[in-house]
Figure 1 (cartoon, rainbow, N blue to C red):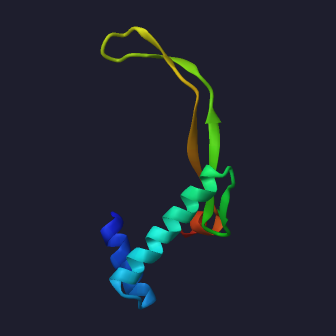
Figure 2 (figure 1 turned 45 degrees about the horizontal axis):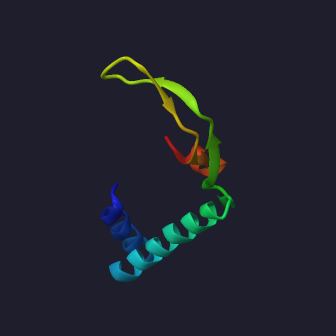
Figure 3 (figure 1 turned 90 degrees about the vertical axis):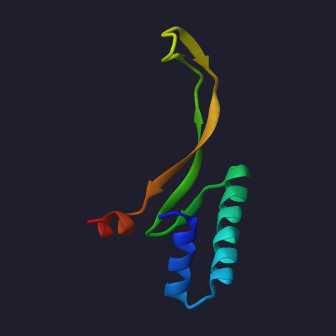
Length: 90
């Protein structure tokens, strides 16, 4: 499912117009990104939790040249699935 399909599904299930569904989805994504940038986690009970994790610097291998390369430390977003969502997947 891509963003357009998700907007259509939200509109259908909520009774909102597609324009308002797009606005709601955009507001949700913006709010999550802002919270993560501020160092907060976003927990949606039953659905899951978004959080930022620190990845340490490490040595990798360039697949084209097979030479070692240094991969710098970085931050990454992690999603932990909630119990209800996990149980709902068949």
